[in-house]
Length: 402
Image: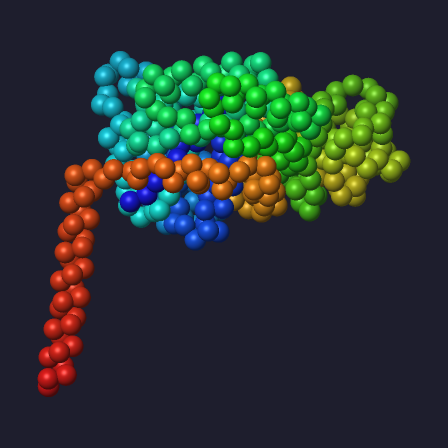
């Protein structure tokens, strides 16, 4: 059986998946058989008409893990599930989660289990992160964002629930620490947490390109169609602006931008589109893409001029300000094909998180206990293997005798 670690956080989008990916890659390079699980998923993808956690699908595809997605992602919180669970008194999801976990653990040396959000997420289903960690007997690695007062408050709040559920915190990783505050946060937060008896395994700096979307991700998020400029879809965007002002203001915006700029405008704003083309031929280097809002594309001659710039032009049948609102809430997620981002994540975590110390701390942890049913299956498997080998040996002797 395996040992397991539960990755939780003090809030959402702190980088749990990034930490999981870095830890899994480290373990695999050590020759350790690794399993991964997302017990309760809120964001999901559909595969063969079934819904699975997008994080479970991501990790399975990156590392070609052999485990079934049904076990890696046993519970998906679909719309209406919480109300149905509460009002209809549905049976607890605990048995399903634990059974899936044990099947993965049987085929692994080490299982990385990624929670959802902070310690209390899932309480509405009686399966908070603290509940799940206790159910599978896994110590918790808490991921918190870099800060001082606010970070300490959130860490202690999460700690109280884990302690209430009798689940042990192995330690913390402080993620997304701003470069200009790195040394101060490392010293002050590190000292504060040590005084509270909490171990920190690393302070990971905030890296811009890991948190900025590519044009391809913007297109996927808005369900936009690519009209031209496919070769530039992997450009990373620092600044997304709505271009509904006068053409001269659009021209000034583009020419004075010091960041990789992405514009949203209406497909019928010919004056704005001409200003964009003019800015390009004036030598603008920071304009990286355009998202057009509308049902019909611009006039053919305008579209031809836009295509000549070579920058990606996307189009979506959604209002300009709705698109802007959608992109203001865009969370950058790693994809299986994003090799550069994955490699950057691993190098970052390898450099700034003490994975060796985490593994030494895990050496003191007990292996996951096997339930009676799993124990009996294991015994039967061993018996069948014995009789197969016995029959092969008997057949071989009979052949030699003839």
